[in-house]
Image 1 (cartoon, helix red, strand yellow):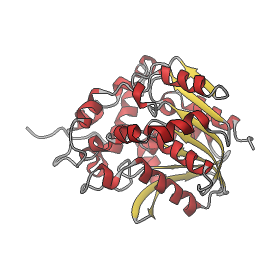
Image 2 (image 1 turned 135 degrees about the horizontal axis):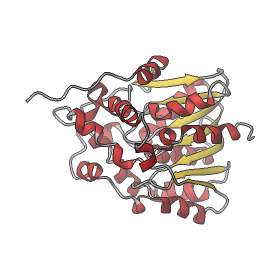
Image 3 (image 1 turned 180 degrees about the vertical axis):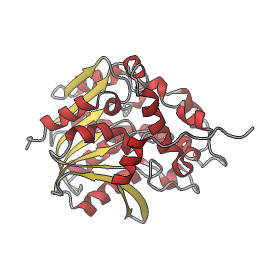
Image 4 (image 1 turned 90 degrees about the vertical axis):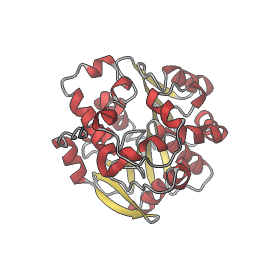
Length: 306
């Protein structure tokens, strides 16, 4: 039986892709989207797993031209290069992804950022925050906003897909996954209110296409080994999460998140009482897609921070 053919790329995703560009960073071909006035001050966004920059399309649209907004596809995601040779340690570690974000900041000559980080990107963001506190980041962070993410990996509730991938080698598969298998990765982590929206199928189709592009389904399982890296460097990233002191920190979380459960947000608030915590009962794991206007407004409210 022939494999199911992927549906056409939705217009909104095609538009997003056409607005971005590829740049060589540390010898890697990396796609990024850069909107707004080309100042040295920007909203700098780090997406999650198994998503891509497109997850923030609605947020970027909400912010509009009020500030420069930069969001990149991490290596192995979206339209950035997707190497099929090597394994997780060779290609996709959280530390290597942080290096690429730093290099993009150098390339764009960014000096000050509001840092937004989600899911896997939450830990990449924390690494950038740690480097900033150590005095070796290329920019100053004037505010950090963390969205749902399992840096507190001991509290994580992995999906069935993640469990299966963690039990397998982190090398690329020999064949692409079927379209349905890619599509089915996403719906379970959304809130029931999001699933009821008229455009829900199109949203999931956009996310799945970002994996499907350029054989990404062959490596997406291997990249889930970032959960193991989180355990190995837990002390460093939890220390930053609980003790970050060089800029205000806000945490925005969906109460219906079945993976990065709401108890994680409560623990962050308990360990770091000065954290601004915002819980959204009608949101699951994807705040930037499920409640993009609220995320955009939260960013806009912080544009005046020093």
